[in-house]
Structure formats: structure tokens, C-alpha cells
Length: 214
Image (cartoon, rainbow, N blue to C red; front, side):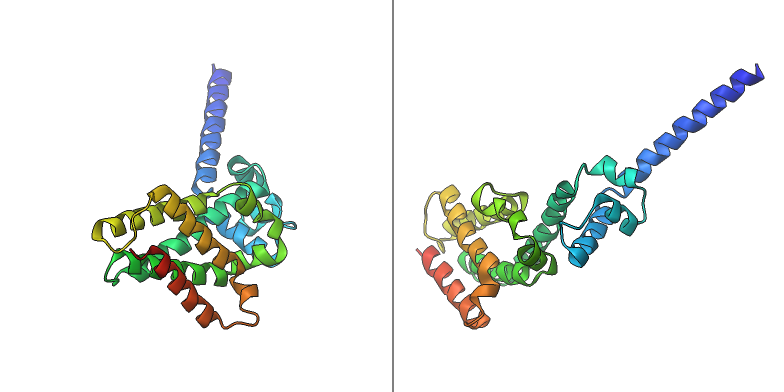
């Protein structure tokens, strides 16, 4: 009888421990792990970042990381989505005082280009591991690009309604604006080697505004 009780107690304790471990893994699966991944990438680049190093930086067990992310690329994808979507959300605040939707879109796009180009993680990826960014230019749209396109879609629709933006199929128009914006974001640093950044961004806002004007 005592053996059965001991066995039941041990099994219960083991199950409780497993549950606690799973809960702990869930609690640290997002921001803690992504913050650690960001620190690793900024320090040594993507190629030299490992899940084990992310776990050490986050001060969690390796299994905690492995349960959430199967490899470094999946961590990086989640990190880029969090970081760059956050930058774009912040940039969207720049258009709060715009007189109409076209001006708001142009202000937000300009702020987004500035923010992405100056972001340490974005610059590290382009400088150290550009091949990781290339698929999002030549193969497919990533989550951050789709997020930006959704925001552009809403701004363009609002501009159609208030008459400040030239009417066109919104899906095509938003994709076109996205391509213009991301080309400036990816190329702003090398493009300003012999051209002033302020002047180039001023021309960017003029080009975008003129393209959208009715």
C-alpha cells in the first residue's frame, strides 16, 4: 500500500514538474528569447549565432529554446517580424497631424525608411548576412512586408475616400508603393555615400506624393 502511494506520488510530482517546465517554456518563448537572439545577432552575426548561445544569453535551458524554435532561421524570422513591424508601427504615429491621407501616407513612408535604415538589426543583416534578406526581395514577401502592405492598403483606401489620392486598384497601388518604399529602405545607406540623406529623402517624398496625387 505504501509502495503504491509512493509510486502515485512520484508520478504526480513528475507530471507536475513536466507541466511547470512547459509553462516556463511558454512564458519565455517570445520576448525573452527574441531579445537574446537580437543580442547574439548584433554581437556576432547570424551565421555564428546558435540556439545554444541564445539559450545562454536568455539564461534558460536549451530545451526551452528548442521547444519554441527548431532552428536559428525560425528565431530570426520571428525576430525580424517583431522588430521591423514595431518600427513601422512607431513610424505610423508620424502622420497623426497630416491634413489628408496622402500626406499621412507620405509622412509614414518617409519615417519608415528612416527607421529601418538606421535600425542596428536591419543594418547588421544587410552588412553581415545580406543573403538572408535576399529571399524577401527576389522570392517572396515576408510577414513584415505584408504588414506594411496592409497599412498602405488602409491609407490608400482612406485617400480614395477623401479625394487626396489618385484612384486605382488598391491591391496594385499598395504593392507598387511597397516596392518603392522598400527599395529606399534597403538602399538608403549606399545611396547616400555621395548624396545627402536629407535631400534624397526629400526627393523620395516628392516622388511618392506626385505619384499618388489625383
